[in-house]
Amino acid sequence: MIVRIMGEGQVKLADSHVVELNELDDVLLKEMESGDGPGFRTTLHALLDKVRELGTPLPDDFLEPSELILPAPDATLEDVRAMLSDGGLIPN
Image (cartoon, rainbow, N blue to C red; front, side, top):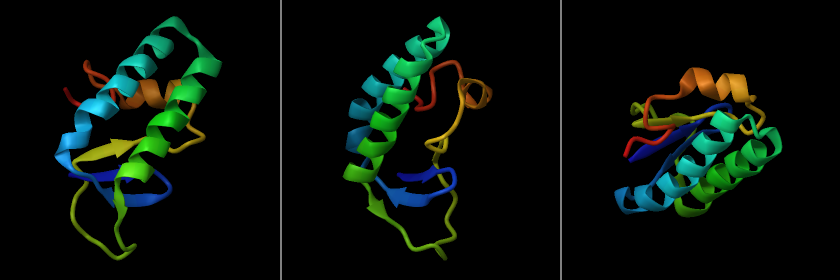
């Protein structure tokens, strides 16, 4: 799976990691729904850090489409709300 972190670039991530990322995505969704800004920020950074940790960075000139697009680390609650689907940032 190709994942783009907005403002950073793309990483290649094994499909097997989606379950682990979904756990963080579920927490992020709950924090967004409750308006927990500090919790949202912490969980967003944890999610992006996990993608960076588990993924392999792709070259800047790599031109394949991303299967998953995640917000930039400095995204606001409102920015991420605009990106959400019913299942969160990461499809189940």
